[in-house]
Image (cartoon, rainbow, N blue to C red; front, top):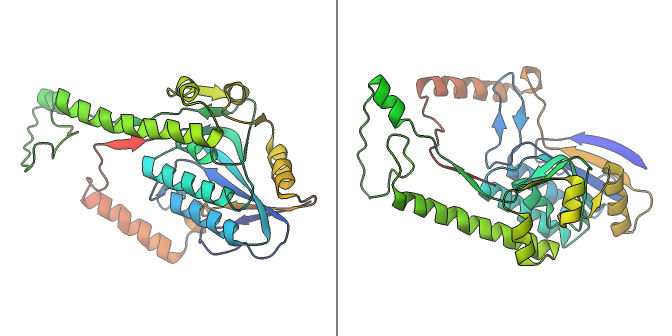
Length: 290
C-alpha cells in the first residue's frame, strides 16, 4: 500500500495520477462559508466550498475507488454544514465513503459524516452534539453604565431583531426559537434517515449531547470504534480493492507569511487596513451554528 500526501488549497483537479486510489480528505476546523485566516502571519481555514471541490474531484475521477473523510471539526455554520453534508451524500451514492472521526466530529461535522457508508471513531474522540445554537450579545446595560447612547432608525418592526443595543422582546425570542426548532428538526431527520434510526430514538440521543467514540457506538451514531487504518481498510473492502494507493488531500493553504503569494500578502494587508478604518466589517449580531 503506497501512501502519498497532496496538500492543495487551489481547488485544482489533482485526482488524476493513480488507479485503485483511496482518497483521504481531511476536514479540519470550523465549517464556514467563507473560510478564515489569522492574517499575514496566521493560518488558514478552508471554506466548505473548498472541501466540496475536493469531494467533487474525487467523485468524478475513475481512479478514485473510495473516499475516507478524516474529521477533526467541531462543526460550524448551518448552511455551510448542510452543503457539505449533501455533497458527502452525493459522493456516497457513486462510490464508497467512510468517515473517520479522529479527535472531534461534532454538530455540523457529524452531519457531514452521517451519509457516509460507514463511520469509524477513535475510542476517546468526541462525537455528536446534534443540535443548533444561536449566539446573541447584548451591550445595552454596559452602555448605560458608561454613558453611551445609541439611536436606531428602522423601517420594519423586526428590522433590528437581535440588536445588542436593547433588550429582546418575548415575541422576538419566540421568532428566533422557531427558526432553531425548524433547523433542529431537520438535523434530527437527516440523522435518522441516513443512519437508519428510529426518529424517537434519534431525539433521545441528540439534544446536543456529546459522546466519546465508544459511547457513540452504543448510541448507534457510529459503526465502529477504531483507528485510521481501520477506516482505510473498510473503504478498500467496500470498494473491493486489496492494495490501494492511499492519498491524503488537505485543503489548508500553507500557514504564515512564507506560504503566501504576493497576491495573498497584498490582500491581507489591504484587509487589515480596511478593518482598521471600519471596525464594524463582518460584525454579526446573530450567528446560527450546528
